[in-house]
Image (cartoon, rainbow, N blue to C red):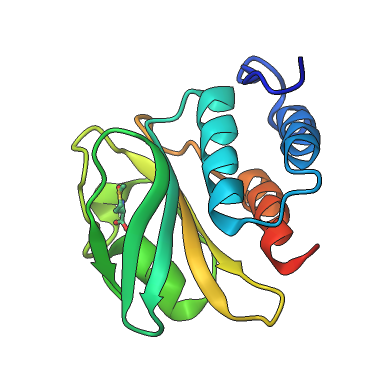
Length: 162
Ligand code: SME
């Protein structure tokens, strides 16, 4: 059955993302609900790699405020202002943030003290409006790099119809 979660962390990263993307696109085939897509991506990315926290902060007030969900992992902070922490930086700049060591990132918000590195990818809709950021946190330093950036940006391209 196609809808089970895949555990891919033993594979080379690019191959893991290739399989993951195929799985996500397959599960979302015919789906046009953004929350369903966010829940599906959070679940499949989280379990594929065994991350600490994986999920979305949605834009509830454009230019000002993000609110949590859907996500997988431990309790996330409920709201984050644009410009605050790594999520807020991604939202304010519209650019992916790859943070090797969260403790070295000014203003990092520690929802879970075990978080050591993270990546946050902005999510745009078909009209080019920022609708969310996709935040993935790891317990290990330096987990994320350009490979994660490229593949996670491609994954959330679903929201702009790519
Ligand atoms: N690490 C994020 C906060 C959100 S959580 O870790 C779930 C940040 O600094 O933006």
